[in-house]
Image (cartoon, rainbow, N blue to C red; front, top):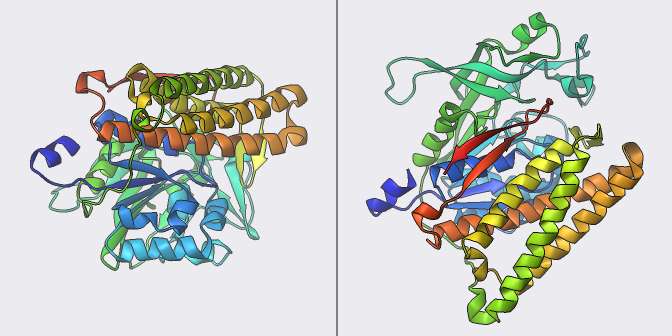
Length: 428
């Protein structure tokens, strides 16, 4: 997609991926998909970037899973205004799971700041029904009611004919707490939940799952001003589902492209001793490796932390570590780390050291309230560090610092929140 556009002298849409407060690990799946597609016009941003006006330099904003209330609170009035202005001025918003809940109609604060789409959700009830398994993941408190999550895993989606297509077709995409949408007159339905699969895991009775999801909208599109909002209940960015990935990539391909690109990557060799810069980066990579090993050890423990409305476990932490470490290691092996200043590497090393301290606290004190604060601080620190390193990684791709045959081969960690963990190889 990107190579074809550039071959014809066209600017590609500049994509921002939200990795700020409230975001879960699933935003790293966008990185995996863009890696596979060799699409490098990507930046990972936070709520502070949005409030600071960074959306003016982008054409697409993508927001994946997490704690919808925490995301809305972090963005606040300034973020809501910036997001609305971005779309009205021609930007494209793509929300999945929590990112789909965010712009839907709600009377609860702070979600009421983001009532951009009049559609509502069908997976809402005043009483929680009987739960077969995983009660902690089956429902979420929503005022005096509950948002129900009766199924997890792959579902069949029926895609409705759009833009000249002559017939509907079915694909699969995974659902991990995303909404079943009741369409309103201001949206076009792109896909509906058509059925379950062998991979579907039922947390509640099948009749409950059928009544709440089957036939409801899984994906909708809303025009707002000169731009569009696309809302997806399932995680169509999950890298194990390339057909679902294609839906998102096609949206990006048709998005407005302003041609603006504001990020810069400092050449460390031009401003400081390159030997010192490389030494600092190796020290960061060593600290990061130590933290990753410690996180792998925690994965065998049945630790759980309730942070906001979301349940976190060591597996989610390891997904972030793997996304971070694989790119950081790649920058080193290909020599791209020479363009990272010693100051940045030292700051990243300090962050990795802080993460290791939180891991020590968790390992020494165990599960529960004793490690709640350490777990939250660890996840926040790790998320910010991963976003910064991934920005350096994709920018090095954008600047052509790595030959095409030098792109990395990796194993994409796929967290299904069920044990055992599994990984799927990908070739980039």
